[in-house]
Length: 429
Ligand code: COA
Ligand code: AMP
Ligand code: ZN
Image (cartoon, rainbow, N blue to C red; front, side):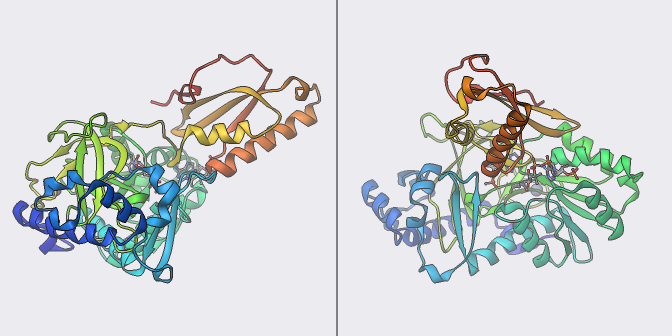
């Protein structure tokens, strides 16, 4: 029933004691990096002064901007000890990069294996991983975790819907990792191919990477004929394997032996009580190469510290309720409005304004970008305009990693708005 019984069933007192010990070790380790040496000195705190878990509040926060501008200065090991990197969100100097040592990769795999075992995956299962491989953490993170557990793993990757169905059918998949909106979208492909997923031996789905409702989970479970478990993680904390649902499906257990969780009021930075929605802040407790202190995720959720019937005392997270910044998630890919702005404003043909509309058709996210073209480029030459539209599409795709539909419009015809976020209209459910 438990992958790591000793750790998973630690009682709250012992779990807190373990966290205290690991917090000190982490702060000591982080202090070896140029970035944290400087920040800990500024805050005037060292590991010796951390007597209780509440003392974590004396440590400085770490933000995505810190990672963008000074990520490499957070390394605590020599360069030749690193074996992997992953990056999130875009290329225009905006990507956040996380580096892993061999031990980090192994510990991460172990955490993911713990999640999968908890939800019911076992050796003998056939696990099809439909998340993006490459720089996304969802693909390789689950891949290593499932192999660690001993499941037969199909590295299907994202996209190519007919092939996904074919693979599930041909290899009698029993478990899948899939983005929830894509799980519903794929039902069309199943229908086109005359396959009913309920006739396949599928038992488990692990769904995450984007916000979704309880209603959506129940729809996936009914249509696919399986149990679906919510999976939460972020690249900055390895990737998946931070919090995961147990068979009770009553919130996601945060692995508190590996992550110290705080929920704060995003405006004041003060702690939010259990049950109250706030921003999630995590401190790595076991990471070797790049331990982060008090990383501000910008994700909003609440925590439930009531005991869970499954016997695990690791506290449970609610569904993610939103963000405190303007990041949007399309087809499981994180996008910041600034990225769109940078691409468009760097092109001489683009006039001053653009508008992004997000909709969902058959559960597939659609991103329509309406772009004003400067007068002298807006010719009645269809070939030229088709070429321009293609170039804009390519430029946006290369930055965002999803393909938008681009519509060219005449200058000064779009409503003028203030702020980049307002240029994005999200009409998805
Ligand atoms: N997951 C997997 N496949 C998806 C998807 C999703 N969320 N959304 C769409 N697709 C499928 C499409 O159905 C299409 O396949 P099909 O034509 O055979 O049906 C194929 O991917 C390409 O879709 P399209 O919309 O034309 O391409 P795009 O360039 O906009 O997007 C994706 C490309 C889907 C590959 C890209 O968005 C992606 O990698 N998404 C997954 C991200 C991920 O794994 N996130 C986890 C982060 S930890
Ligand atoms: P990435 O760093 O690319 O892995 O993206 C991480 C982000 O995806 C998180 O900060 C969340 O905003 C979002 N996310 C991941 N898992 C979930 C989930 N289960 N529910 C809602 N949002 C999620
Ligand atoms: Zn539980």
